[in-house]
Image 1 (cartoon, rainbow, N blue to C red):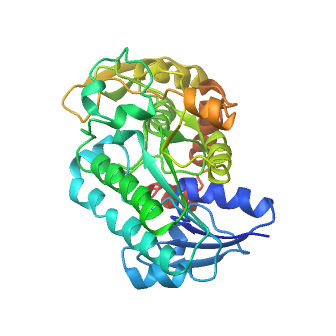
Image 2: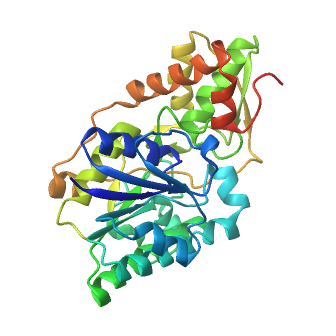
Length: 336
């Protein structure tokens, strides 16, 4: 029986990962900055704490007595949030730095850091028809400003704690993870959840138009949460020590993503393309050659399958007027 500390336990990926680890019979300690009523998932049999993990003493206390530490915590959101909160995003470096120091002192067996595709050189992502990004494309370094620089720097911190102190580390570069039980409004949501919500709201309110940030031709790849959890655990218990992509190589335009949600709604909408809104890079997707070869992993859910699960979950909250869930996942009130 293994004992894990999950940092970012109240978040989207953290909640799904905890559920999987509990199902496999592990002991879990979870910590998040959010108050418990705003955790996306709560579990009675988890030793849960609401603490600021930017503080070294909290990192030291939380990592004491566990075997493994998985760090999913950061200040992040969709493109609108990360483009307008660069300093706050970069301050997440304090979490990783202090956790690494605490893990070294407490002699933790292995540490996981969740990096991002935003760590890749943005100059390689100016074309919607870009090939999937390979792990070596992070250098020469020119990541997304703010959030991407924090991720790339923290990757290097993991590498040097391994080289200098012998702390075993694993690093995954996530590519747009999505699915149920995650935020879908309020500014921190990713594109799949935002588009599902916009289509659902337009259908419910009998609107014929939805807003789209950008011209709709920008491309991305999106990975369903269950596949993400599978890949994280496979990487964590492998011998692979360098950063690796965890994502899908199923690249789509934003317009194609909207079409999937429209098909689920049974209705087509006019698009109000908002070219003055944050759009991020023109094209980004994952090259999965390394993870297929090294870990023998591939995703199971197609984009259509994953969006259907996400769409149905969000629609159920609206239709059944589950205000407590709406507040938890959007920090808004469904009745207003």
